[in-house]
Image (cartoon, rainbow, N blue to C red; front, side, top):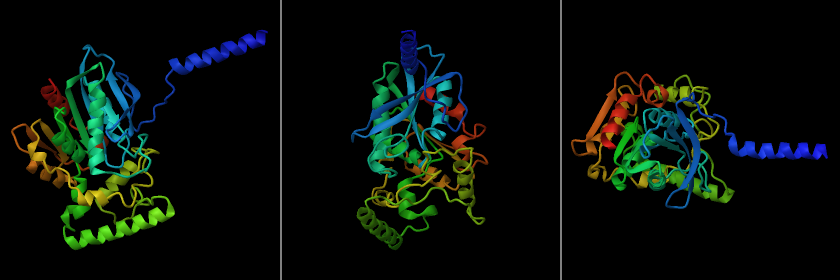
Length: 340
């Protein structure tokens, strides 16, 4: 009888412990900030895909409703990497923040894995706004977004579509449609190069369908060739080392599907960027190979509430996780000025 009672007590305590004690260990690539609370949340986009994010809330919050920021990127990363770092830091500065995995990646849904879409991934930002706008602790009129790397372009694209987004930051952005259609530095901006790429990817589609699976293109090259361009070495230093490696990150592991670029060649984003009425801040490193993407996007923007900030001496990856380089003071000022 005593044994049965003891077993029952142990079971009850175990059940209570399951509900009362956080069971998710810290699995981020950055240190935990004790001034911020984090929790996993789920929401869905307009296509019915379930998205997963990490919500960050400042412990010392004083208002019933707070401004909020949705954050995603880099392209091929997960929320436990750069976007989570940005989210935690901005939460420590007085915002409710949401770092999320885009459709088909990380812990988010989508039956086909490791594929990107200029439409669906733009929609993912709006889905994050849907979720935040319906939280009781968020002021629905004070929601902004941050896109990092390839999701910087998606963030600007979302701002051109979603009037609920009141302020946008694109950090070390890529225009994924431009780079896929034209190659790096627009070196392959001609019909023959695009045709050759489309032939290769469409042939791959036939193979994938026959095999019943999608071949992966591979993440950041490993081992790293001695003659690799400096920006590839910078990527390696982040994604392939303890600094930024994560088991769910595409860039750290097998990469995107080989056919993932097809829609980006055919459906350019930023077509209506010039119609964005809300403030936009673009941030880029002076030495970044990708700087021309921010400069190109900035040239499309109109109005006196747009700004391009160039960080002296910084490269592309410095803006992923270098706390001495990422201009969080500037972002805090930008959002507090424009989310009020």
